[in-house]
Length: 397
Image (cartoon, rainbow, N blue to C red):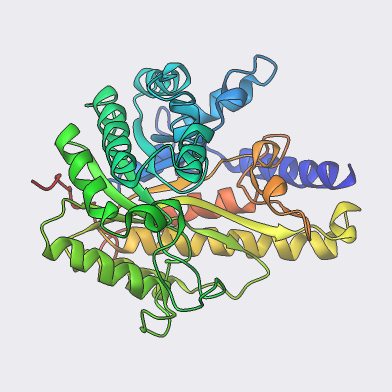
């Protein structure tokens, strides 16, 4: 494909130019931060930089570069799919721990922390569960017990090995849903009511007192109108505030950070203000699933630089906005990319009408894109007095 060749050529040019200016940090020569990895550069801020991991790619012997970069560039890893319910418990009461355990072991060997994703979500549920509720063979009371047993089993299995758990994921509707007034959505709210959210956090805390427990959602990077009827960030803020007031052990809120270059998106100041407001509740924050997708037009497919360059520049700017905002708020503990190479991005499979892609910081040939270099620059050139070390977070009792 012409697009791949164009991107690869551009990336090689950037990499070559960078390499020519690199001065090794040896024997009297100046230190060169540009030669360091994202994880090393983030370390001085106390920030963890991570990626979601595709286990098939990680284990593909024909692609050693995927495993090398997953190990060297990142200080945290998240299971893209293998900790979701349909993967862990495909048959009721029978767990398939193998792939998830393998990721945890990969993290241990590479001195990485693990974000657990996800305990409760309305998608990627096993057929035995959704089918049983649909045909009436699983009652509402039994469903609540099944949820408790699943959370307890999963968190107990990984006890002491997970830094942050996404306990509840995407529980809130969007303004374009029906009804348009924001509300709790999905399988769990429909069958158990919104009280399942507090239950899930309490059950997770009981199973592992030392893991940080997060609520995770998309489109909550910045506040809008401030009206919880149509401002999703405000709705989630009010929910988190109410959970805290009731003594529910929620430790943090994760903003996913799935952005697109075709949208207006947000400024650094807007995102930083949102993170700061959540921190005011006594909560940690994290950017948990960051990618920036673009529409793939015929011109992009054909390698037209006039269409490709603006997308790459807009993508880099949006990645940078989220990183700068996280750096500016000391309670923002981690910044996780939802995959790091276009070769294994979920975006083309999820957005096909119109087609979208170019969503990660490495191209399909594992060459770093402009976005990667901008993230590095943010980490290199940020520091006191506006960027300070992270404030440690401790699980709530």
